[in-house]
Image (cartoon, rainbow, N blue to C red; front, side):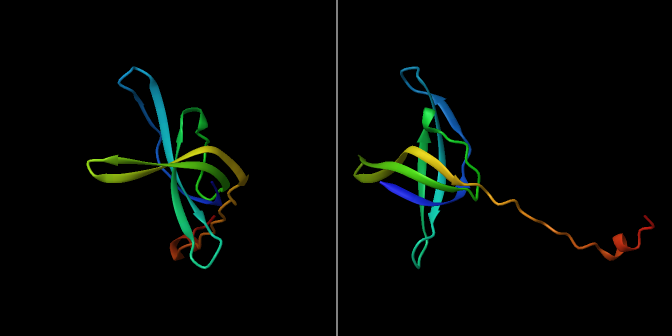
Length: 108
């Protein structure tokens, strides 16, 4: 499956060691698909060597697989990205500040 959109959230990297002693790392991000009348968001996980450095505002194309698992009679879904391609960079924010009255009166 594939989704195209803009990154809205990037959560911190999680790292650990499995019960077998294998090191693992995981990062979750949220992509918002802006096509259509109602934008949809999708949280996805990147694992190990599939982790890509993302920043909020980037346009990306995410290829992913979904899995469901049952735990104590409830079902949980996982969305695992196997390829993330950055297709557009973040536009630089232009911030213009208005001087306060005290700053306007400075002699320099």
